[in-house]
Image (cartoon, rainbow, N blue to C red; front, top):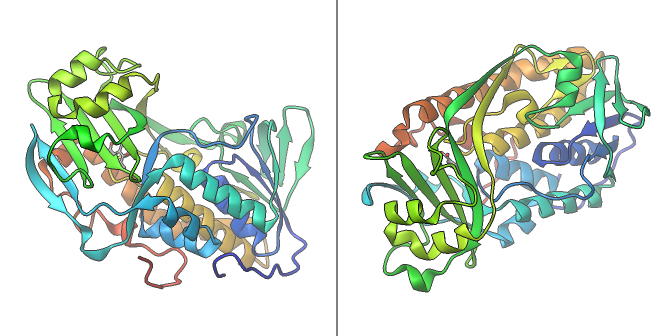
Length: 379
Ligand code: 5PR
C-alpha cells in the first residue's frame, strides 16, 4: 500500500466506526483501502482535532506511511535535534534516540492529514452522528434510533466510549494525581534569549513546588506547551493558566507563557483504563476506549493508530468468524500496548522522567515497533 495510490479490491464487507479521532480515522481508512465499505461516525458538528500538539514515533509514522498520510505530516512537522531534560533549569540529559524516527506537530496538522487520507480512500464520513450503543452481533445504534449493521464494528469513541459502556466491557480505571494544560502558542524565538530552542525541553521543578513545562517546537511558528501540575494545586491547574505562578517558576519562559495565558485552555487529569478484553463478537475497541494511558511516553495516539491499523489488517484477513479473528488480533497485539501503558503509569506515579535519560531501549519498545512491517527507512 503506497503513498496514496491504492487499488481498491472488491470486498463486500462493511464496517461501522464510531469516532473520527486518530484511531477511528486510521481504522476507517485502512479498512477502506482493503476493499471494505466503511461509515465513520463523528458526533461533533465538524471534523476537528482536539488538543494541542503531539509527538509521534516510528510505530505511528509507519502507519501514516502505510495509509498514504505521511507526506502531508512530514511537510507540517519537525524532528527536534534533542529531547532535553532539565531539573530547576539545569540540563540533566539530551537524548537523540540514535536515529529512531520521531516527529513533533500540531494535532490539527495530524488530523488534517488523516481526514485527507480517509476522504481520498472513499470512507463515508457522517458528522453530527452520535453513536449511543453497540451490539456484539454486529451493529451500532445512533441517537436517532437508526440501527447500522456491519461485519465489523469499531469503538474508537474515546475514554468515555459509548460503544464500550453500552456493552459493559469490564475495566479497571485509575486516575493519577497529576494533570496537564496543553496549548499551542507562537514560538517567539527572538524573545527567548540564547539557547537551543529547537530542542524538546522538559523543564521539571519538583522542589519547592511540583510544576513542569514540556516545551515542544512543532514548526518554525508553532510551539506546543504542556504545563503539568498536581490536581490539588489549584493555582497550577487553573485555566487560563495563572501567569504569575508559571512565570515566577519559569522566568526564562515568560515570552511563551505570556501568549499561553491569553488562551483559555483545558486542564486534563491522566486516566488509565485497562480492560479485560478489547473485543466481543464483532465489536473491537481501539484507542482511548480500550487503553487510555498516561502521556509520559507520548504513546496514547501512537498505540491507538498502531492498533487501528493492525485491526484493519487482521479483520481483512479473517475468512471464518470475525469474533475469532478479533480475539486473535487482540492476543497478538495487546502485550506491547499493555507494557507501554504500565511504563507510562510508572513514570506518572514516580515523576522520574525528571531524572533524564529515561528513554532506554525498553522504554522505547513501542516507539521502535513497526506494526506495518513495511520496514522502509522513513526519515
Ligand atoms: N510527552 C509528550 C506529552 O505531550 C506529554 C508528556 C510526554 C509528547 C504530556 O502531554 O510526560 O506528560 C508527559
